[in-house]
Every structure is written in structure tokens, then in C-alpha cells.
Image 1: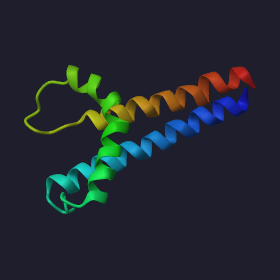
Image 2: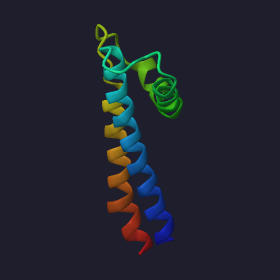
Image 3: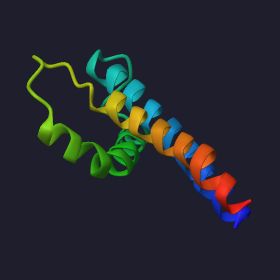
Image 4: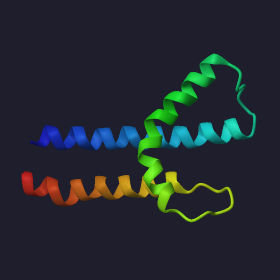
Length: 96
């Protein structure tokens, strides 16, 4: 059971970094730092979008319009942090 908990925590940590990479990539893309016509850059952006959009879309639906500022990745990171801490502090001690 401990292996399952460690795997879930590792998956949450990996998704954490994917969300951060997606946010940084979106800033680089928006400010024209990366070449948007490059096929490799486009495939990375598409991959990050496909990995993060299913989790960000429901959050964006409930968020008010903040004038072009998207804080849904921050909210998702807070949710992931809460889940990780809940698993480590509440679920793991019960299993061990």
C-alpha cells in the first residue's frame, strides 16, 4: 500500500511540474520569445496544452474574468498541493 501512495505522490509531483512548464511556455509564446512557426515548439505547446487543459478547463469555467490574467494554473497548483499534503499527512499514517 505504501508503494501505491508513493506512486500517487510522484504522479502529483510530476503533474505539478507539467503545469509550471505549461504556464512558462504560454508566457514565452504570448510574448513572442519562442518561434511559433517552429514545428518542435508547436508540438511541445500542443503536448502541454493537451496535458493541462482537461484539469484547467473546469477551473476557468468558475473563475471570473480578470481582464486577461489567467490564475487557473495557480489554483490548480494549490489543489495539487492540498491533495499531496492530505495524502502524506492523513492517508499515509493510517495505512502504515
